[in-house]
Image 1 (cartoon, helix red, strand yellow):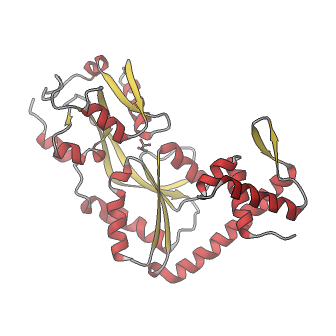
Image 2 (cartoon, protein in one colour; image 1 turned 90 degrees about the horizontal axis):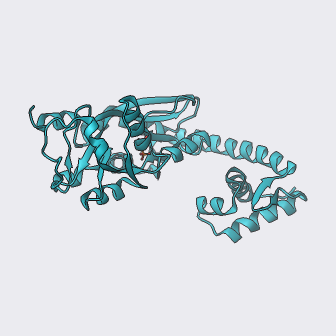
Image 3 (tube, rainbow, N blue to C red; image 1 turned 180 degrees about the vertical axis):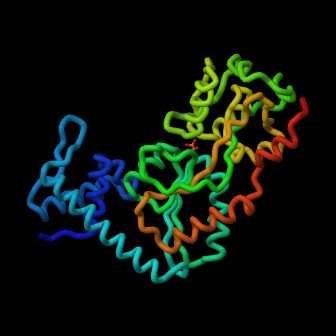
Length: 313
Ligand code: PGA
């Protein structure tokens, strides 16, 4: 049988997504290029690997076998490359990290410092929401993940490295801004700009209100913290976001944090990987760096400073 690693890599991505389009976008290829490689693999094996039923594609029986072999061959290769990375240590390793969109407000600073120390390490960074990160973990296609609360149904090694307070924000001219000790129930009268389904910020917020026997009656959904901040500034409603996404707006006084009883919602940032995953020296080094140094290195607004500057009452 005549096949290439490139064909296997492309086939594995199509089989995982069950979509030529999504595989093409993951691999930064065009869809015709992906289809051609899969066709050549099918010619090589002499069997169809996918079948189309209606608009959806499925793996044939041969396709399912091929998927098993492709995963095992690519996994073995990945392991081999890790062994060599480990031998090269931090001189020349690779580090693949995936972070929550909310963590992207500070992780690049950590990466910048890490790369200054270890210029030979090749870094790739994926930014997505919580749901995307859970996929990255279950597909085992990243070394490390930075996000809020780790999922309970996955066997992970997860370490807290910093607090992640969620605060209520408003434009400075809002009637609630400057008021002390606003009752949580009062927020129910306001429109809230909320993150999309699948966002960790969103699920933490929903959980918090349910725990307090409350619900937000008027919400408007937006798919990024950036959009929410712009919307709040423009007067569309209030927001509940990680304090770590707000550094610039607070500094420029474009947004204010509301002094709401029961807030902030106290969450934590975790760095995690699948239990049993073999981490390269670069990934081990980055993990240690984040756990030991990030909280001091990053000059982020903190819960403590927030409480110190909160109006008395
Ligand atoms: P996000 O954050 O999904 O809201 O970007 C992830 C998390 O807080 O876990």
